[in-house]
Image 1 (tube, helix red, strand yellow):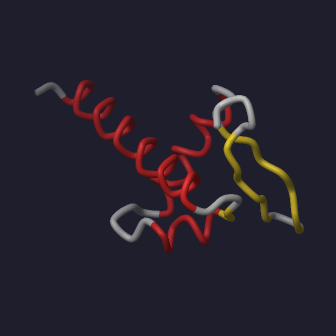
Image 2 (image 1 turned 60 degrees about the vertical axis):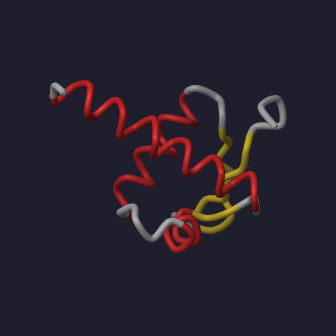
Length: 77
């Protein structure tokens, strides 16, 4: 398996795990998602949220300075 295809596979499984966590109990902060997904690093969770928010799957709402609430986009649920 090439490094590129491994990265894509890892990204897809990371996104899937994050979406499952949000479907189970949304909305969440990045810190709470990290505690729900102990096998993932903070960076992996952050990058998955970034990918999913850019594609419109999740939405971010500021709740405090430098803290956001992440939830599934209503159109996706």
